[in-house]
Image 1 (cartoon, one colour):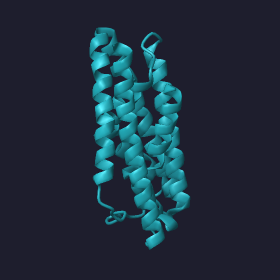
Image 2 (spheres, rainbow, N blue to C red):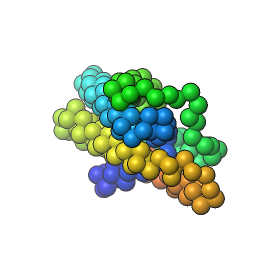
Image 3 (cartoon, rainbow, N blue to C red):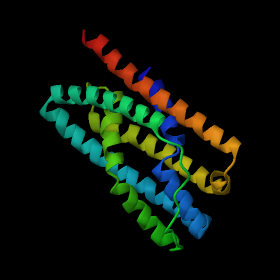
Image 4 (tube, rainbow, N blue to C red):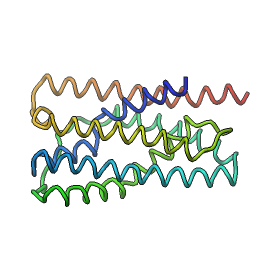
Length: 207
C-alpha cells in the first residue's frame, strides 16, 4: 500500500505545474530546446543533491532518536496537507518569463543546478515527503535515496515534456485554462488526502 501511495503521490507532484516547469519553459522560450533540456538536467542534478542531503540528515536523526524521526513523520504528513490546501487556494496565474535571456546550454545547465539546489522549498518537501514511505527496521539511507531518485526522475521527465510542449503551455485559451484548473484541484485534493491518510494510518498502527 505504501509503495502504491508513493507512486501516486510522486506522479501527481511531478505533473503539477510549479516553479521547476515554469523555469524550464522560460529557458526554452529564451534559448530554444537545447537550453530547455540543459536546464532540465540541471534541475534534476539539483534535486538529487537535496535527496542526498535528506538521506544523510534523516539517517543521522533516526540514529540519534527514533522518537524524533516518528515525530517528523507526523509533521511531514501535516505539511503535505498544508501543501494541498495551498495548491487549492492558489490563484491561477500565467507563467512569468520577464528578464529571461539567451545564455547557452552550458550556462543553462549550471544555472538549473543552482536554482534547484538553493530552493529551500525542495529541501523541506523531501524532508517531509520521503520519511512517510520508509521502513524503519531496514537501512534508512538506501530507501531514502531510492525513493528520492524516483521523485527526481519523474520530475525531470515532466520538465522535459514541458520543454517539448512549451508553445502549448504558453498559449492562452479557455480550454487550456480549464484543464490547468482541473489539474490544480485534483492535485491539491490528492496531496491533502495522502497526508491525512498517512497520519491516520500511522495512528492506527501505534494504537
